[in-house]
Length: 172
Image (cartoon, rainbow, N blue to C red):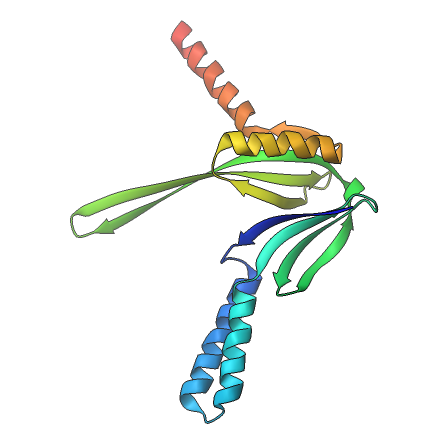
């Protein structure tokens, strides 16, 4: 049985950069030349590559996993042995960016919970990204059982360490 976990369009990574470059080249070719048909085909191909859907396929029968980019019906990626990956990890990512204009300063913060499959060498495959911890935790529990992998909840561990530090400070 093959299971597909789609991450959707990411707008980052190699395929988005290449697709954007192909689109720009097609637009320049359309403006500069008299090969309108070829330029339009180039622009369409660029958008297909730019909007490539990312995901992971797991073949439980053959114990293989493949991180892929979906270009229409083609799923480009390399199959790897699933047995090499022994841990499934929930990691918390918190990013903030400050925008400054004239006399206005605003900070935007985003948080996400990423689920990775990791091997002993430290190599990772991103399985899914979540906005809410509860959803990420449910996914972690489900796939730890399905993949028979050790589950590690880094967010929970970090949160418990912070609580311990706060309790220690309150004692003194």
